[in-house]
Amino acid sequence: MEVLKLTTTIDESGYLNLNIPTQLAVGEVNVVVVVNPVSSDGKHKPNYDFSDLAGRLTWQGDAVAMQRTLGDEW
Image 1: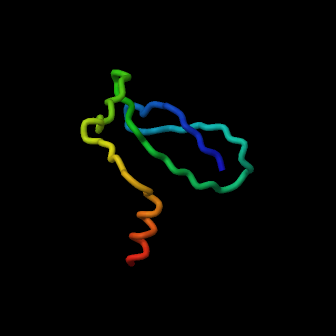
Image 2: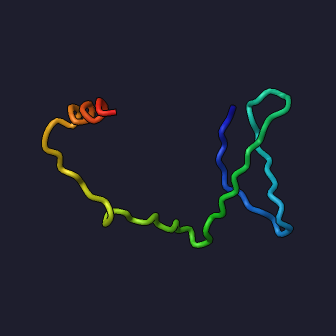
């Protein structure tokens, strides 16, 4: 199995032509194509920043002992 990633273009008629040399033996292969448009300005839209929603809990005591206690209740 080979995983290949490349950037190519779709022609004016809407066709995507792939001509990819491989080291695979002659025979049938399964091909999976994922088409992900590239923005024309070359900039990726930044992912949402969840830092304002994230927090940290402070725990007093032994967390593993508490997990075992809660597990024993089941």
